[in-house]
Image (tube, rainbow, N blue to C red; front, side, top):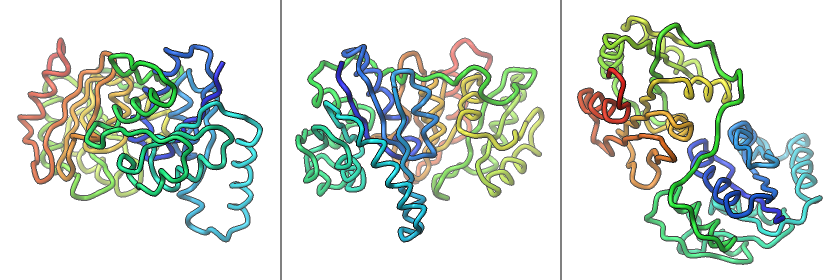
Length: 324
C-alpha cells in the first residue's frame, strides 16, 4: 500500500483542479494512503474527497503577514511535525512554485515535480529528486493528472473524476422552488460582469420560475448581492456561508452562472451545469473543466464581455431538460 503526499496549497480553483489526481491514484492503487498539504482555508474542500486520508494544513498566506510572530513559528513547527512521522513513497508537488517545492522538502520521500521548463517558477525544479516534462499549454487539470501519472507510472483514465460531494446536511436551507446560483464576485475588478447584465439575467431566470441565490464573501460582495437582489423577484441573499455551506448550496442548484472565481470551478466539480463568464482573463488553461457528467461552458475572454443572450443560450445548452 503506497503512501503518497500531494502538495497543492492554493488557490481555491487550483485546489479543485487537483482533485481528479486523487481519483486517478485511487483507481490505480485502491489501498493507497493519500495525504495532501493545502492552505488551511481549503482543508474542507480536500476533506470532501473520500480518497484523501489526511488534509495537512499550512497557513503560508497568514504567516507571510508577520514572519517574526512567535505563534507563526510554532504553527510551522506543528506542520513539520505533522509530516515527520510518515515516510512517503512518493511526494508530488503539482503547484510548481518555489514555496510548494520548499514544502515538499519538509516531507520524507522521493519528491516529484515539474521540470524547469514546465514549472510556473522554473527554480522550483531544483528542489525535486525527479522532474517531469509536462507541456505548459495544457489545461491545469490535465497538467496535474499527467504529472501524477508520470510520478507513479500509471495510465490516465480517460475522464477526470473530481470525486467530491458535500457532507449530508451541509449548506443552507433551500428555497421552496428550484434555484440558480449567481456568482458575481471575483478577485479582480476587470473580471466582473456588469451589474445590469446580472439583473437582466436574473429577471429572465425569475420569469422561467427559478429563485436566484446571490452568495457573498465579504462586505463589499454582500452589498453588491443586495443591490442586484433588489432588482429581481424571488432573489435571496443568504447569510455568510463557510466553504462546506457554499458547496451544499452549489450542489443543490439547478444551474450555476459565475465569473472567473474558485466557486465556479467548485460548482463544476460538484457536477452542476455551469456557465463561466470570462471578462478579464482567458479560459484556455484554467477555465471551468468538465468532469464526469458535468455540463459546462466557458464564455468570453480578455476584453470580450459576453452578452446576456449568449449566457442564456449557453445555459440552455448545459441545463438540458430544464425550462431555461
